[in-house]
Each structure stands twice: as structure tokens, then as C-alpha cells.
Length: 289
Image 1 (cartoon, rainbow, N blue to C red):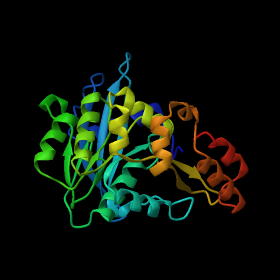
Image 2: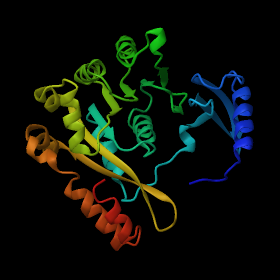
Image 3: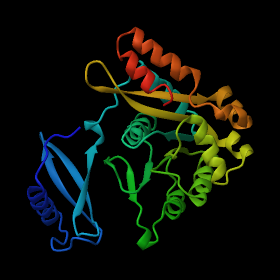
Image 4: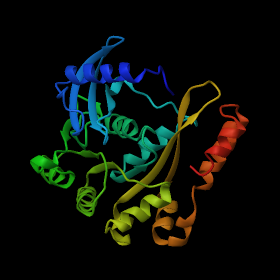
């Protein structure tokens, strides 16, 4: 939702100011650039990651990513204690995969799960870029130019023997295989995969070269999440989960994966309408995820 609209001239000046603050080349308007700076909002330190690029006319676009401390973040639940169920699931370790649109709170969920389920144990994160600062974790950032890819950092990470990994995204066969290897060796591995629902997450792992018998061994749960607008004008997270027998059935039966969402997702939306948490219009809008 837009907070304020600026004229083109004011926008150009604002971008130049931010680039200067972030030690980026102010005079460069076409080549992609990245920068960072720290600001304080309401007594909370927030790290900003800036990315700029110019179009064929030299007009720039600037995106700012806000990186908060974990204790300043919270995913409010649409259905009570779904997060509590996730905490019980991750206690079994193995590979837990999350999917959902950008900005749906997947990283916040993974960080909170790791922090609460792995107290006083070593947790290593591998991300591109690091989205949340957490002093209790060992946080590594992908840098392909320095040969620090997801799979290379995961190989290094295994030598440090953490109890849990958070992998920002599984996006290639090498990272998928390393994540499976880590989970098979007894680690808790939390990661995200690009998919439109829980069933698509399983299919995506197969596309990345992970065979079904390995998925049956290593997958503890798959979880799809969305931030749903509520009647109180805020938003709350709703999870769609597969685990235990339902997960095993989905792994071994490709036909069931033609479904968009599970029955639990539909039932959850209907309950939220009955409890006046969301409108009927919202429930219909998010019925397919």
C-alpha cells in the first residue's frame, strides 16, 4: 500500500540521497548497484539493503529491503496454535520445506521455529541475502563471485556440525542434494522452495533430482503459508501443512498432487469466516492459496 507519492524530480533526489548514504555511486544511473546502511526506527536498529538499476533511458528504480531483529518480528496466526503444531513437527528433525509468495513471512517462521525448537544449540543460516539479524545464529551470506554459493556454504557448514540449518532457498539440484544429505545425517533443515502449494513443493523437489525414496526418508513436513487480510485491517498467517501419513501418501501418489490445496486449508478459511476473523470475499479470494 503506497504511503506517499513523490514527483519524478523529488523521487530522483530521494534515490540520490539514499545512494549517497549507502556508499553507492550517485553518478551511475544504469548499471545495477547494491548498498547497505543502518537506520533507527522507534528505537529499533534496522539494517537496509539497497538495490538499484536503470532502464534504457537512464531512469532508476530503487528497492530497499528492511532487515529486522527477530525479536521485533511476529507472525500473528489466523488459526490458533498452528505454529505450536509446527514446533512439534520440527522436533523430529529432518527436512521441513516452506513455500508461499514473497513477503508471506516464511523466513520469520523458520527463524522462530529454529530459535524456539533448538534452544542453546548451534543454528547456521545460509541466505541470499541475510534477511533477519539473530546474534544467536551463525549467519552466512551467499556471494557467487567469491565462490560462496548455497551448496558450497552448506558443504562448509556441515564441517562446523550445527544442529540445525536454515537455507534461504533451494533453487538448484546441488543445493537440494546437500540439504537432503544434511537432513539424513540427523540435522534439522528448514528451507524454502518455489511452489504454489504443498503438493507443488514435493513435485519441485523431484524436478531438482531428489528421488521419491529419499523424500520419504527425509521429508518431515511441507508447509505453505499466506498472510491473509483480517477484518481488523491487519493480516495474519495461515498455514497449509502435510506431515506423517498425509505427506507419505502425497509423496507416493502423483495423482493427489493435482490438488491446489488440502481440505484443511478450505476448512480453516470457513472456520475463520464463522468466527468473523475474515470476510467471505477474502475466503473465496484465498481458497486456492
